[in-house]
Image (cartoon, rainbow, N blue to C red; front, side, top):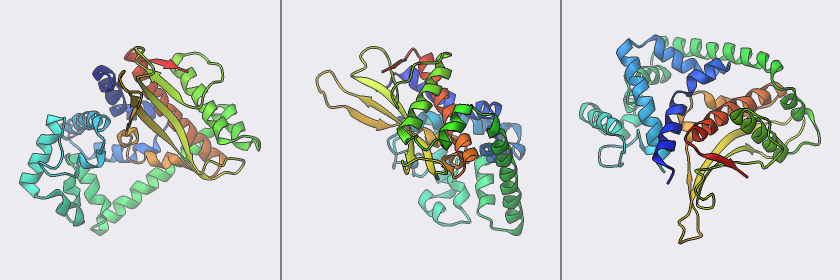
Length: 299
């Protein structure tokens, strides 16, 4: 499996990525974070930050991350003692999590922090006041998103150009993505290379490595293209006695801010640029974390 130090460092870096995203100008995805923080006292917000880190570590170890928060005691084997205790307290105070989720009046109790419960309750729109809050929240998201799209003009000209080039295919987009991410992570411009970022702990790249790939749906690409892009991250390992590699998906998207999925959809050049640069930022962040843990890039 991935070395413990590398995995913990990767989880911790991704748990704090909202700070880096904000500094890079990706602010529309932080609307919910800012809403929760503005309505939390110091202790509630500190607790939320603690939970975020515990959750990040749990997710990167889990093959079924959806069960982390949506399980009762005994239904899932939590590695984090903190999360296991929160689940126990929820079950004691509110009962079966599956019943809580079914009822919109209690669904917010499935969340394991006060800050997240407060937001979840509002999102159910159970009162006129909640509806108004949701409308203001969406208006703020739209305002920030418009700002991001306006700022897209100053992005790398190569990224702008590739969207308009009728000869460009999705593999070419992937290769540009890898070149820009690895160049930024290493602080140098590498030669054109593969369409997948592969890192290894350096012992034997045939037995263990992590791959990052910018995927798209659909993969046909050209001027005026509409679609989705998203990051896939997998950990592959094989024992020296068996050539069959074990594959485990790293659910990195679950560690990103709640509205980050909006960076997956594009239907114009500006939206493509914003999506491309947002996922580039996340991938650079993750790559640097593994490099800091003495992993290395390989061909």
